Length: 333
Image (tube, rainbow, N blue to C red; front, top):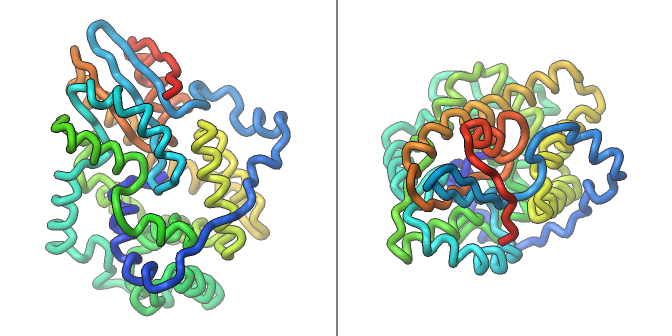
């Protein structure tokens, strides 16, 4: 799951086009619902903390409420936010992937450095993709209201993030706080609760800058798999339902399994690309977050919110906190 700031950046780009089109409801099928219990168990394996979006972590006088979030809007958040409100309003601190200060830094950085997103020196995407790939990408961009000529010089990684937003989600997310993260930030601001970030605003830029163009293009090609309107509607519904069921680890492994089923996909290369993405976007960031979390919250009651994909697995935030001596308890908000 990509960082909230990048999704906000993508939605800022697509919002004018999304509002010009009639709003659409995803209305897709829940693909995970078709799996048998044995298939689900095989995907998760023995991963620790594979389920549950809400946890408490305690060590001495430090009391943390950990909230796995979903970065897009959904009406089901209303009931969750109502139950989380008393917890947040009694906290001394809210930590998130990126807060209002980081958003302002990002805007200033983008104004000063457009090359972050735009390839100002190299070949365009139509020149590095095959003709069928560019046609497929053009169709995917048009479905999101983005003229292909406008995106032809975008960095490949940024196109991947754009494609991570199903067209049916655009209108619902173009305005207002984005996702559960955004709603928690708004609530904390309204109650004058300090908000601090888990990482610098330019973390994603630095991550993608280390990836070669070939790796970025592999990511882009993975994002194009199954980008038909019906497939994207199915994946949007599957993703949202898995989140609200607390099945964050199952969702990640299901996405990998679906990519491996793609006709003509090279299993070795596909697994390698998923491993690279998981290391760069989840594992490495989780490990970088941990000392920052502990330093900011020692002796305090704090709420820490971040994408639910960061919670589970051997390198997930929950397991890392347990290894650091915290006692973890599931929370039903």
